[in-house]
Amino acid sequence: MLNVDMIDVSLDSFSRILHPYNTVLITSSSKGKSNVMAVAWIMPVSVNPPILAMSIKSERYTYKLIDESGFFVVNVPSFENEKEVLMCGRKSGRDVDKFKLAKFTIEPGRCVGVPIIKECVAHLECRVSNTFRLGDHILVVGEVCAAYVGKDVFDKMYKLDVHHPLLHLGGDTFVTTGIPSGKTKK
Amino acid sequence: MLNVDMIDVSLDSFSRILHPYNTVLITSSSKGKSNVMAVAWIMPVSVNPPILAMSIKSERYTYKLIDESGFFVVNVPSFENEKEVLMCGRKSGRDVDKFKLAKFTIEPGRCVGVPIIKECVAHLECRVSNTFRLGDHILVVGEVCAAYVGKDVFDKMYKLDVHHPLLHLGGDTFVTTGIPSGKTKK
Image (cartoon, rainbow over all chains, first blue to last red; front, side, top):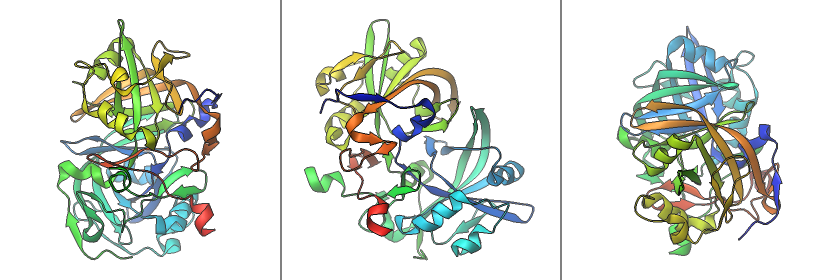
């Protein structure tokens, strides 16, 4: 397909052109307070050592907790958790206990002092190794110290017949995956 | 769903837990040479100014061209381009002309001296503003100077009935999106 008709996208909306992104729940903890927030701008940046990066706003309560403790956990929800994830992205942990509101079950992490969300299918426990201010966000870089995933949903990669990723398209709209290419085309 | 049975994932495979990622084609150009490579580890990092970041290996030919010129273009393919994108991820522009192999039509960009791929549905033209070595990859940070998209496929966000994102699950496996959540659940 050749697109002859292109339209300009306003530069402050450019991010939509890169979506959809897998949306995850970031848990954090400091001085007896814990929080959970939704993040879509997160990705691996190195294989060995295992490092990921996520972009969040410095005024977020999660950033304060991560900045104080130096640790966070990435919890991977599924499409079935859409409503709870949207709430975690819209409300602030300064005002409400989002774990309670979402009815999430928390339990201790393995290598960092941060709770994990048991309803999620996978967890990456991280230690902050760098932060960079880039424009109006902070890039938080974390080295992964533990990675574990539900046995039923993963075998080298997600089994999409049992796990439905929660992909953020924009605004309040989430989508999930269709059929793996190998099954339709090869 | 509560996952009681968790399995450890080897740390150098942790990235699979964050997939699927939208896969894009990065075009670059320097001293009369141009190249295209596939990248999945790319995301927005700031809204205003508009900034994105991508993680690539320093030995990639694309990195050499970007390092020399200071510019690159993000071209967004669709699921229908799966075969060409896989080839662009597997072969090196040092050895072959991937534009020719993929039968891509190139035309000049608008604000940077880098060709764009006309078969793609959207384009983000970028000027490198920073690079950071993070583990075994380089994080290339670029400020977006032009963003445009096919009129038929986008209206504030992608219209998934006409555009099928190319999502990399792992290895040679790509998937695309299912039905937007709004249409199934609300």
